Image: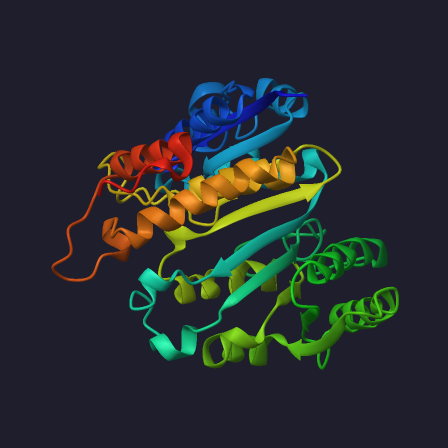
Length: 362
């Protein structure tokens, strides 16, 4: 099989800009490796509210369920900051994850040697950093009921189930088997009953994987160690809210949110998106970093379509461009020349198309 449908959801803010570069690179992959990709586009988030009155319209729902994989830009708009219900841009993303049955979010974090001085951390502390955050996506505060607020109080419900914890734990343990054989599970079991259930369930599932070393950390200590000793982590397993926070913290290691990809996997087609948000303050200026979106396209090839060789080609091209000095403003040091979103995307696509036959021209 060499024909695939990749649903493209450009989203809001810088989403359309970075997604366009990811599509450009995927088109180069198709030419290089002989695949045929279709790229139907659908609205989500604030763009969908403007177009159809809700953050995840019916035609988007139908389109993504018939795709082989989904590429998403970002959602969010300050113009809808006070919106409620299905007119909140973020509600479209939560509904999309639920529709796809996406329960495991994979967020790899590594430090490219050429960027070791971009992070605010010392370069020696970043040596050997290569971790994978596995975040549960369907439970926790984001989905718990009851929820709501009035003028005097607000409530959100933190809820996880054994079945939800088991399935995401197995994703983490299987990932560790292909990496360095270690899982660190994050919770707050000293004060939360939900976290006690989490710890007990993860410990039990670990019995199915005797080749994997398991440790448990409270989330506050995990947050500290992520900065003080980041290379000590292999696979970091977390519930929904903790994973959301820790993965953004981990972006400090790489140097920028703009560099990091993610994959949300589960029962339906996989959802692939950069970790960063819609960044409306820089939208339309052509300065957004497209590497997170392009690296998400590489994860789409690997985890969504099973095209490992093509994914490795994209990863190599990203590494070569960074090694050659390509920098967007978010990762540029004082005095370094910066390139636009499209310039970096075009160069990565060129390297993918020609494989190892050409050197970066930047």
